[in-house]
Length: 335
Image 1 (tube, one colour):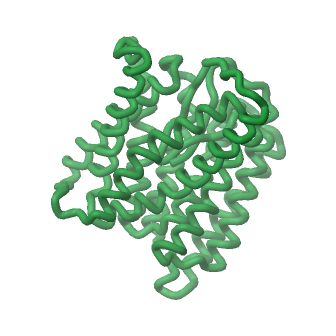
Image 2 (cartoon, rainbow, N blue to C red):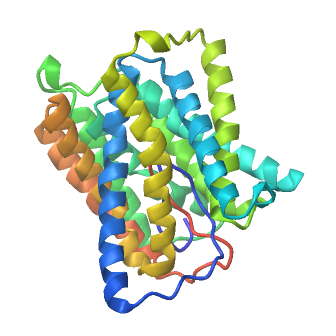
Image 3 (cartoon, rainbow, N blue to C red):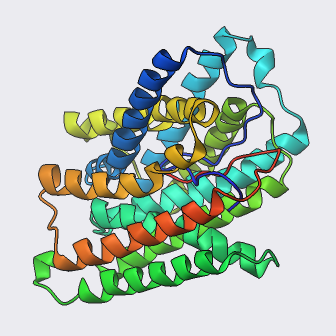
């Protein structure tokens, strides 16, 4: 992971070169606080929304439709401020977006939906996805980029937390068990998300972060729908409850558009050290919301293992944010 935080769930790794707007200090402080709250709450709640959706809708096609609709809405919004010409990209840039779309929306978020469909609690899912910054450090090490010793310590600490979360999570009552198969699917999703985040700076991508996201989302969405249909998924939209539709719409509008816009704005108007806090606040929000709304159990394994993982992520991010920023992009991880 290069300098900067790791972003998005149910959301996308981004690059941005646009200069930050000039805002009065007092107004900026208020806007920063609002934007942080949006990112904390929205991205922290996307795991819960996914859980609600997959209880009725097939995971891959529902996720794919979400990204296609979000891409269309965001594309139309961008076109109103720069014409459809703003969305034009070269073939090489489109290929780069498609590759990122494969690893993030498809193999990342798509497998998250499958994992939750198989029974992974939303809070545990968020904690496992939070391991992505640690995995990026491992990919960097494998590619010859030697991380700092403290960063390695953070990775090892995260593995301890992961082990405790999964192993101790199998020792409670049946209702408190963390389904091993579902947890492994989410962990694989986190690995793909981390790899996509790591490989993105090595691809040719559009300079505009929003344009890049539009193409990542629609290409990933199409792949998800095709994969879902090939897997045998048969959506029946008229049979879904209002709760499922509201959760799906929430993911489209707030998860993929509102929170992402707030995040990109924060990158240009707030210290990276402050923006990066979302990576270890979101899992806490997810665990709390899962317990309050879905009655998901908060076991000692989740509390202790989750706390170790959150501390490990904080250690890795605190080390990475002092590295010299790259001129091209900022990596992010999320929902």
